[in-house]
Image (cartoon, rainbow, N blue to C red; front, top):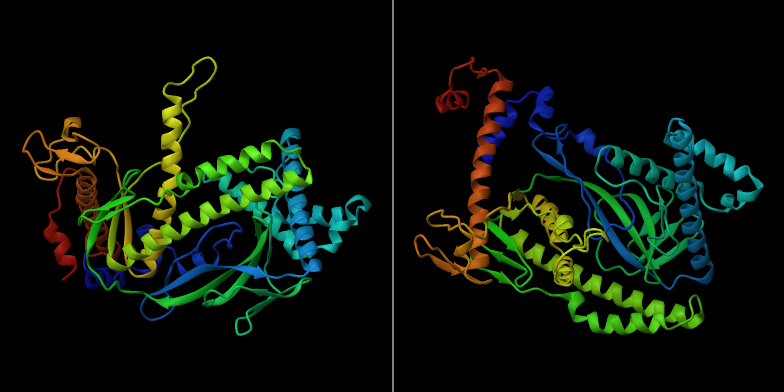
Length: 472
């Protein structure tokens, strides 16, 4: 469906029908949850703005920077604030679990805030008053949102936080960002300098301070409105991801894998063995642990840089991208089994799982999603079954078509090609059929909402000419 036709259809839909078409309102995006600490890369919320002429997008984006040379007093306060937020989160989670055991109703966010006041007045936990009140309240909001996501089946049940794992706290207000002098003011911490690697766009909504591998970072969440972008390209491609080849596109492009973990695996094993020989919690053990954490952080940063560069290149050159709807968590599940029913080929499956997770398939799909939207493109997932076994020429499906890992030969028509490229072509063709079907349904719903077309009576069939008449 062309952009002009889509704009025409949208203009005929009344304001009461946006929910039926599945398009979020501007106010829904305004009420979206805030930026979560620990999220890697940029996050976004996009919504169509209906209160201005034309179409606008509301974009929420996070900018992460490393803090430079904080003072000893600031380091102590940040560690204390993170510990206080962790304590409040764990105490509130324990309280909710206790109330569930006794049959009481779960406390809301407002109820937890009242309990927080009681903790501050208690002599045993009076030290909580030394921490900024709003960052403690934000921890309670995180717990309340975790319960909401659990009941909506979007996440697992909330777990207790551990010291040194995802230590963070969030300021909803009171901050001052000075981009000219590369510094930021945070309540009770004062001015802190940060590594100004890029400019912050939009209005700052909150600031999250987090720790990773001994370094402290700030994540600045912003919000801005931009005009609905139009992608400069009109090409549509399919992408097949793998282990031997990170990604193959339907136009024949092959992207070699980085294998960040595999490259550093020997050094990581040596560091971990050295740490295992140390007395736990001794000074030498802490130094060895810091080396392991630093190497893990380096592996993750290398992978993140590779995925951002690959996704940026693809999103810039192609307007529509089709990818396989892979369930990475299921594909990388352990095959060890149980003591009663042990698994088979556990060692080989463990190596495959390690290679799958080393590629970052889910992360590159997440990055392609928001980068394409920002540039006016679209990412469409398609079913993954038989994409590597189907012949793109005659449509014959057989496991014998794929002679080797890299070579495809159709046993029916004799078509030959690279197996990964063939899979990408099948993904593109399947995605085009899905887009065509969705476009027809979108146009039909728009006509029904505008009153130009009515639902067909039982046992009758409405031709496409009725749809064309409503667009006239």
